[in-house]
Image 1 (tube, rainbow, N blue to C red):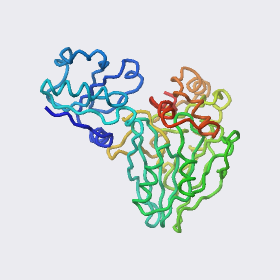
Image 2 (spheres, rainbow, N blue to C red):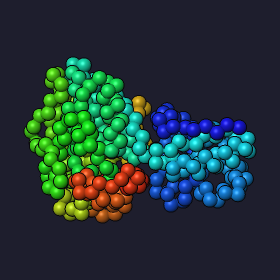
Image 3 (tube, rainbow, N blue to C red):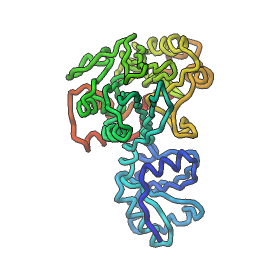
Image 4 (cartoon, rainbow, N blue to C red):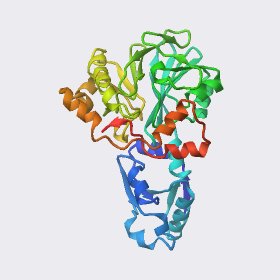
Length: 375
């Protein structure tokens, strides 16, 4: 029977379409429990590949015969080995090309909507890591917001759309993933923007995002207005685009809120976080469409593959916005937080320009789920 590679892009489509798939994950138990491929109609079996070295007979009766199956491992070779053994038993089976490392790095561009005159906004969904990046285009120019380190994706997409990247922005100094903002700006000749209160220790030049500034993209009136919204980091900054979209960085997600402890400042920043969520955002129009920098689970994906919701609906549905008592809020965001992201301090140092590890080291640092939210 056949053994076929399934690319991450194809697996994303299956998940967004809510297709039924069976995932045979052959990583060790701890790796699987910490981070796995998620989807509404996925079923799982986790059996470490070293338990299958002598053959797959022990799991045959646990595998489905009525749905497609994808074998997954960390980098690919182990999944190919297991898939071939299953094929020898008469089964059609896929393996995930590039394994979980490729899954972690895949970016899926999804159009959010049209803005201004002939302008567009796109969301880049890093489904394996829960990261979200954005491209705003107008009149042949583009801005990239919260770029990941896979900068070729943005460069290739800009070329496909016939636009020139003129501005690159980070809403804050990221701690859960390596920013591609500075590299992308250098490659494209764009300006790199960063909140100055997050940039005290950076080793490079940047343009300061200041509350009240306007950054215009193209000749059409598409303005990106930085809105200073501290809480997740000291300099966390939101953007309001065309009085229609609110890019919240890691302050507000669709189903949670940003944690304030990744720089060791939970007690100091919790009041800023509450002020942002319960005062600054409450004063904004409820019709604004919230576009965050992360999502926690695939349940936050809309039917079209986007991660977005109206601000007004979040005031009713997001549990992080329902805590009226200030002391209860303080406890929620400072106690019983989930584990911190892998290598978060090393990632902060990279994003400040203090260190520059090689690509494989960067990949290893980013392995695992994002953990930017209060859960």
